[in-house]
Length: 237
Image 1 (cartoon, rainbow, N blue to C red):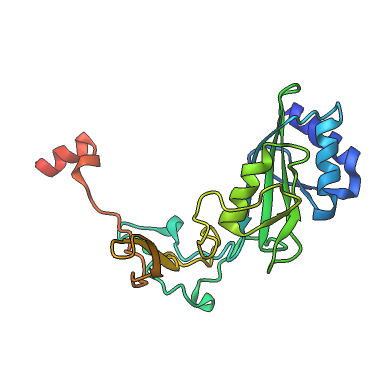
Image 2: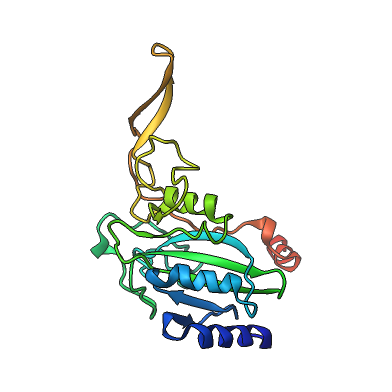
């Protein structure tokens, strides 16, 4: 973290105290967590306080931490024999239990990326909705109008609700779409498929006909195109 970012993080901690918690970042950025009940107050101050002047909301995105740190693809230990995701992932207990040290307190999170054009510094906020069954937090549209479509996207793809949003409806999927495709438990084959019915003269929804299967194993193969000239010469000799 450079001197400017360190100063910003210190000012944020001094301003908000226990209402905000600093998160260590491997990228050297200023990252903080805030509880849902403090979100609007903190965002309003970050925008209006002269020391911060975060006039621009760059992005709002959802995160699903389901199965976080539990991997069924051991890429770091791959050898020339290849590696595979050929694992039955339907039962959570069958996944390898190699977890990272970080365990998120809740399943869903909303992340805000803030920019101050005037002061040329950035800040990242993360909020965990209290209810995992129906995740809901306050909309920041009254503070940054650019949050409008960002929050609609997070609602569409993750099912996170934003209280006070002026027009919270799907933005990428169809209005009749079932489920939220960026959730970790959403089936890869989806729930329904769409086709045009010439007899009815309209688009119809039907149960998906694709059979679920284990993903094709990924294998590291020898390929002469990527061999060095020296290796090619030895092979030719």
